[in-house]
Length: 422
Image (cartoon, rainbow, N blue to C red; front, side):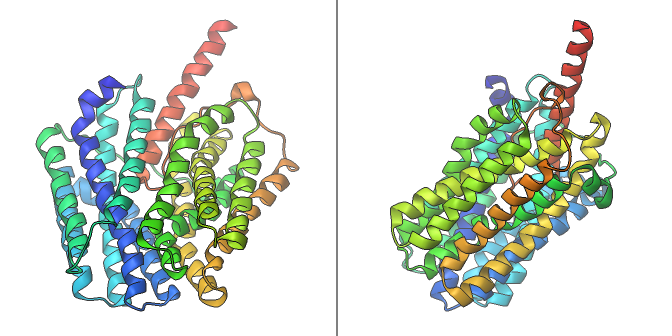
C-alpha cells in the first residue's frame, strides 16, 4: 500500500479534490433546485442528464485521447467542469441545468478515464489490487467529505458553487505537474450484449437494476431530502450514510463472496437492501431510521456492483473478461439514466416516500431474479471462481478494465498453482 501511495499520491490527491467537487455539486443542485421551485420530476431530468453524458463519454473519450493525448483531454475537460459549475446559479432553469449536467457527466467520465489510465500504468501486477482499492476508498471519502461542505454558510447564494469550481481547478495541478510519462491508451473490442446476456443473465439484469438504484442514491438523495423537509445538516448526514455503508461493507462482502455461491450472496444482500428501503418508505419520518436505512442500502448496492461483475467473470474465459466489461458498463449506464427519471415520476405522484419505494422494488426484483437463476444452472465450483475486485459505480470504463485485468491475473495465478499442485 505504501508503494502505491509513493507512486500515485499526486493522482490520488487530485482525485480526492475532484470527488469533493463532484459530490458537492450533485448534492447542491438537489437542494438548490428544490429551493428554486423545481418539481421532483424536473430535478430527476437534471440528475439523469449526468448519467447520459457519462455514458456518451465512455464511448467518445478513448478516441479523443488517442487523437490529442491524455494531458490535453485532461486539462480541457477540467476547464469545462469548472466553468459549468460556476454558471449554474447564474441561470436557474431546470432545462439549462440538465444541459449542464450532460456536459458535466461527459467531462467527469473523460477525466476519470484519463486518471484511471495513469493509475493502471503506475501499478504493477503485485499491487494492482491495492491500487484499485485505494483509488475506490479515495473516491468514496471524497463524496462523503463533500457533504460536509454543504453546511458552509452561503449568504450570497454563489459561494457553494464557487467552492466545487475551485476544487476541480486545483485538482489538476498535482496530477499534471507530477505524473509522467503518459501511458499508451488501448481499447478492447467489446462483447455483444446478446452474447454477454447468454453468458450471465443475472449479471446483465442485475447491472441494469443496480444502475437505477445507484443513480437514485447518487443523483436523487438530495432531492428526496429537500422534498421530505430535512434540514441541510440532515441532508448532509443522510447522503453521507450511503457512502459510509458502501465503504464499510465492501471488503467483508468481497471476502465472503470468494468463498461461496455468489448468487446466494447476491440474493441476501439485495434482499437486505430492499427491506431497508421498505422500512425507510414506511418509517422515514424517524431520522435515525432514515440514516440506518441509507447505510444498509449503500452497503448493499455498491458491493453488489463488484459482486455481479465477479459473478459474470466466473463464466468467462480469462481472454474474454476485458471485452465483457464494456457491455456491463453500458447496461449499468442505461439503468442509471432511467433510474432518476422513474424516481422523480414516482415521487411526484406518491410523495417523497416514492424514492425508497422505487429502490425497494429494484432491490427486491434483483432478489427474486437471483433466486430464479439459481434454479436454471448449477453454481461454478468455488475452487474455479475468480476474485471479487473492488469497484465503484462512479468509475469509468478504465476502472472496470483495471478490475478485470486484476481478476485475470489472479485467475491465471490460481490456474498455475493448481497445475503445479497436480
